[in-house]
Amino acid sequence: MEQEISIIRDEADYLAALAVYEAYFDNEPPAGSEDGDRFERLGLLLAEYEVKTGIQP
Picture 1: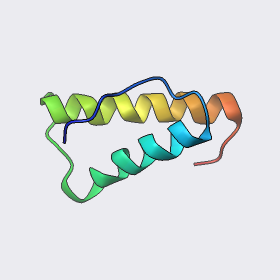
Picture 2 (picture 1 turned 180 degrees about the horizontal axis):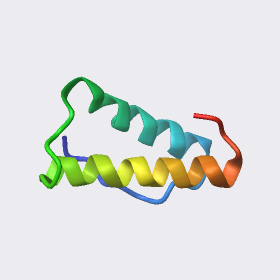
Picture 3 (picture 1 turned 120 degrees about the vertical axis):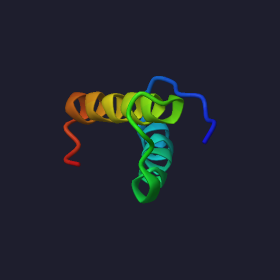
Picture 4 (picture 1 turned 120 degrees about the horizontal axis):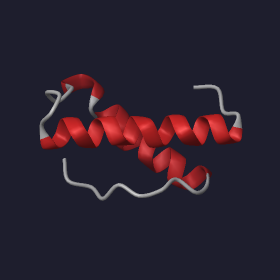
């Protein structure tokens, strides 16, 4: 699942990142793998944006 990960600056970025993140739910990648690291980074970026904006996940 190749997709560049970038800073989440607005709701459109958030929704796009969330869609990519949720796509991993059915087939969560192994921790430490390239996809596993991407999954973890996306989760961290999403959580940071949610705290910053007050979004309730």
